[in-house]
Image 1 (cartoon, helix red, strand yellow):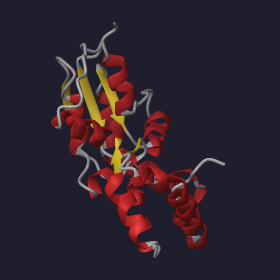
Image 2 (cartoon, one colour):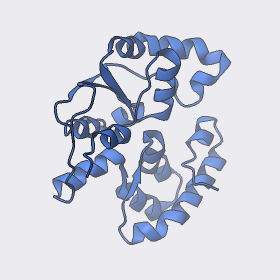
Image 3 (cartoon, rainbow, N blue to C red):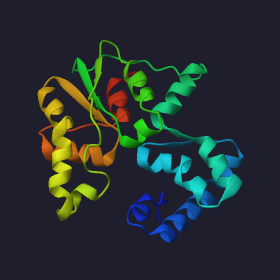
Amino acid sequence: RPLCCGRTFLSAGRVDEAKAEARRTLDTLRPYIERGVPVVGLEPSCLLSFRDEFLDYGYGDEARKLSQSSFLFEEFLVREKEAGRLRLSLKPLAQPKALVHGHCHQKAFDVFRPVQAVLGWIPQLEVSVVESSCCGMAGSFGYEAEHYEASKAMAELSLLPAVRKAQDAVIVADGTSCRHQIADGTDAKALHVAQVLAAALRDY
């Protein structure tokens, strides 16, 4: 069974199940952490659970080591580039602009700036950020019938109008639920920053 950060359980108040998933994840990743292998993740809410909730489950030094070894994809790239270990040959995209929506966890943990930094490596790309709060989806919150209208209203405050206006821009959102909210509320398809970088890689 695939590993799980347990956040889906935690958001439903099922703390014991969330702790069990954390325990399973720690047991699986322990050999890599002990060898100093970085743990890199794509989904902010999952990866940042390693730095937050995992530390409160009573798993002590194991959780602390995982927290220190965990990086979001874009954080890891910035770290490797600053250390001189990363060289990417990038080409301009078909779109001249990128509009970026920050995931709530990226903002809360002050790890949204690496997304902007990585996109800044792409030649001739004008990067702008949507000045928004939560997209309104918040995991499964927006899919629940009793929350639908509130979720939609949150998205319409700034995110969805900004996306609709950005006709010539690539829309970037690292959060899975954020991308779903954008797809459901507009005609746009948002991409993870990893997908945008992949499109910008030069062919050899």
